[in-house]
Image 1 (spheres, rainbow, N blue to C red):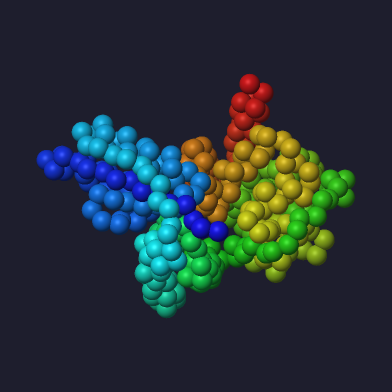
Image 2 (image 1 turned 90 degrees about the vertical axis):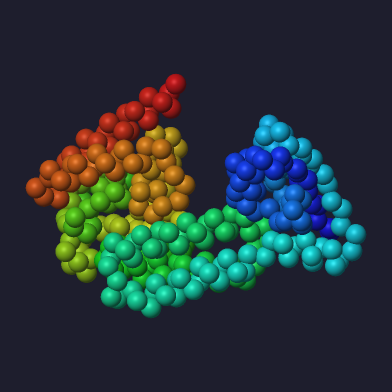
Length: 317
């Protein structure tokens, strides 16, 4: 089956350098291929037609002319030529080189600098992947390298932070998990604090919490969460809070799932959530004032109570 292609043919006034630069940056961000100066092409996939018409309108508003036209393939050679415009191999190779350099010097690097470099490379990879219309082995290889490097960085910047495990999430009954001791790593932060709140409010109202120096110190009868090997930890693309939601049938609660999106973003990145920075700032203030992990959890429970109430109110509107 042949592909469908769209071309944007534009002219802009030579004296309007600001508009020319704006349009060029926008077309580059969309991942357009350049056939020649003023002629840009994209595969007809998803929202590409709308995106090109949007750029055409911008060109016209700047005093230029613009046309979006369809290109029909005539032979396999033309197909190969067009697809070659979208080869992201060199972009992936640049990320791969940086990942190798980062991993080589990981033991001697500053943890904060490691975290920043890892986050930057993740963003860089996702920007390339977003305009990789014909993904192949290069993308898969670099994505694997990125995950491995992120795990190595996490082991240094956040010792004990769990790595996601594959598998299905089994549905559990709340009565089987009542009046228990729940154990996690000391100095809790976003995912652990939110998970402890969820346990106390929705799963085990009489729960007690143990804060572990090391996960292997988990008491035999305690229920561990948010560390490798714990009954409740990261599974696939879900953080511990989301795993608890799924395990105990709480995903139908829109306020909880909305809170889960913020917890996921703050703990593991991903889709930005507008409330996330505010939640993190308030919790950081609570952490600065708390004298112990129990005190911090007490403050966090009040914060999450308020957030949950607010989200419930919005869901009811």
